[in-house]
Length: 374
Ligand SMILES: [Zn+2]
Image 1 (cartoon, protein in one colour):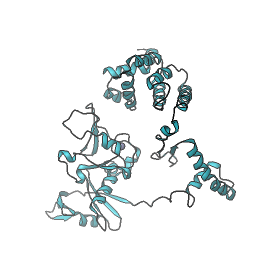
Image 2: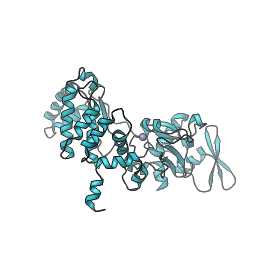
Image 3: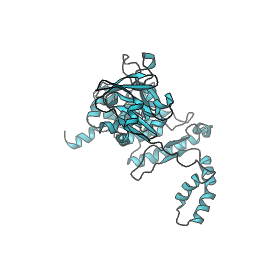
Image 4: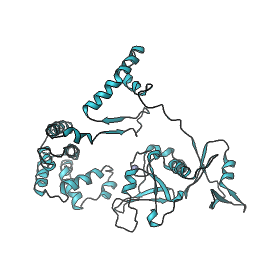
């Protein structure tokens, strides 16, 4: 196939048809390196999946035959912003937006303007739009060590918030003329009385490996018992005292078994498990997920309903979304895939039986698991 034919074959509708018909599986896409193909599968569902609007679905495919996957993704994003009660249905809008031509940025702007126009005419548009208010992001650190949050809300809320911050920002700029308007607004958010308190001091967690010649025996009461190669036994407390004395938390991780136990001066069983598990992964175990472990839920790898215990070996930190999506019954037909603990860490088993995947976020290198596997 020459390059022109290859690009021709990459048109959104042709790729989505291949996905919908099963000619192209997510596993194949994964092996070809298309790691963002999850959104293609969702698009294939929309444009080729079952619907009560077959005629309009076909019309949308015809209108969008020339569009790239990026352009079709933009069309879909704007279609989802159409409010209920608009003059056209979502399917009629799709047909209309699929007929747009230009660069992806041009299609993006034209589609936004069209949907805004339609939404403006909807009764109660403001109340309906209010449901979409959000603060998003704040989870990814860029090369400068900065994070960005995006706040979305009705015009008057955002204007009111900025109006509230502006006097403080202007006072700060008068005191320091080198401050830009944007910098001063940021400072105003954190100025006394108007915003959140400063950052919470971090608690260091020290990762310790179970030394050679020491074997994990069993849990005994609130502690873990280890067998030593000289035939004696030792509690985890004594073992950790030997490793180091005055760190706040010492988490003990076994390279094969995973988290073993956590030690500190005063013990609290459940927070102890949370800290030990959070330190193991630092982030949700869902591949590509960026939710920090502190915001995650404790997930039972073998579900409670399947007889899974609440011991650390059977637990891991997973965000609310990935916890809800996990296939808890390993014998049921796979739907979304499931997490499993293997030697070396927790892995995600995709629903199509493809190779196990892990969360490869760069931060993971600093987790207990990352340090042990390094
Ligand atoms: Zn997640």
